[in-house]
Image (cartoon, rainbow, N blue to C red; front, top):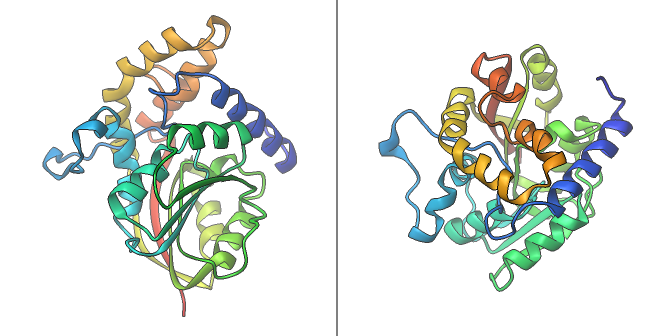
Length: 262
């Protein structure tokens, strides 16, 4: 079903708020599809308490490792339940880490799940109309979120506006294969330069294979029966439409890093 930008945005807000209300808080702090590179020797080095979320974290590490973050002001747009922002804050140690999400329920969950962590704050906001002054942040991260936005062009313009000169934008997300060229034109703004660009679709599929059993168990235990089919599709378990589309390269998963020109 093709939706107009406003309708699409309203649908995703409703859906993410329903997701935020569902699931078990302690087990569901990430909502991405994950990442597993072909060479496991290059896996992210994690503390023992974070191993359970390894594949989800590795997608964030793919985004964070490509930019300078330590000691700087960082913003994640589309922070969901806050696991990614908490990881970046813990391992990369920015001066300030802000997680922004469209869903107030997700913001409340993230705040409660990660309370007590220094330099980390979660707020509600609109990716297409950021409530920050221009040139506020050194780093902006956006992981598996922009495909939900009604007008992504406004989002990219807003990222450009709030980034300081020389600042970094790390973007990780997917598009249908026939929409990639449209996305490339949209994101290729004259005010920044692409420093890193990689297709990671099969890395995401490897992660989905590894996470499948855990997701099926969590859905069976914590999601109402009537919603389980929708959650299985959304979470990308084996056999779902999104899993098959990734596997067949009908949907392309990309990772890009941009630096704002000085």
